[in-house]
Image (cartoon, rainbow, N blue to C red):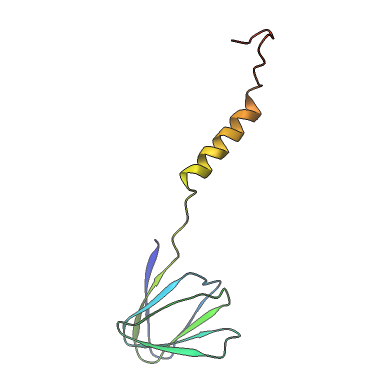
Length: 106
């Protein structure tokens, strides 16, 4: 998971585009958090966090000097069964089927 620490002086605003799945944690200070087109805002103090469930832009404003930790969502890996299915499909496209009785058949 990608993590970034952000230090903001009082009154500075930081925007996060397409934040769905991101985790915002206030490490020090107080930060105001608002999602575009959402009626409710949040105020986070040290030790509090918020996970973004919307893709609309988020604005963070430092109400005092603040340190915020931003964690990007984890990248999802394909499950093993999906990799196996993809591998088999690729082999079927590359290797012609073997028909008993034809030349080259085992």
